Image (cartoon, rainbow, N blue to C red):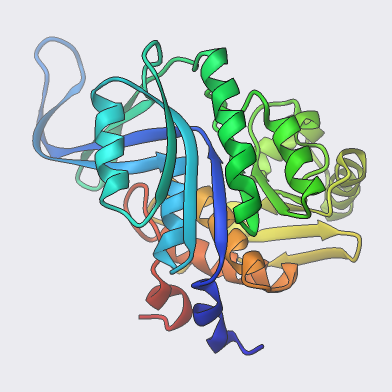
Length: 313
């Protein structure tokens, strides 16, 4: 299949995204003085913008290249939760959201001036166990209707049952992709592919001395977790795929790095779409690398369109 066909085949791809959603809120302004109260800049806010974050951004990236996405997550009964629903309702994403009255919807507030981030404030709590049980029941209904299951773990508590969910999907013959978090990767055992960045991988596997050492650590993790492949995203160094076939390195496609916020969401979403559309893992990685090169040239949590990805416009 020629590359020009991927856009057409992506339209039939169905991806179930499960994980931690958040609202990315941006306050844009100017700074022209230092506060008399403390040696800090005073930002005069002139514009506000809300964007889908976390698993919601991954789902949006799936739809932005023309594929179908269903999002499963938990939100609170609060202003950020309501705003998330508004943004999701205005998007092509199909939603299967559970509400938890005790949950504080994750909000990341960023203050931006002169295209630079001055401050980020995070607001969050973990979801209730009973709500997660209900989500697992809905997952059993939704999973069979999709080609690929994408788990977006931001460590906010929404994926406490991820091990069982992975096992269910694999038993059903589904491709399972995981954007991991934390130091315990055993909970992702049996997945098709993990996509840690280099810092996350080093936190779990330790620092490596050279490329041979990196490959040995990556292949050892892949074998221990029974993964088909492990993709390590390496910022300006590109990304490296480790599988039973060996090592495949793809240099970065970024011409200018402006903001890496949400780049991991773009990478795993593009991988999911390509694999659901029938691409090989190697072709999916090359396309995801191209998508990452586009999105890091944008400010804040962003996505890649089908035109940008496949026609360069």
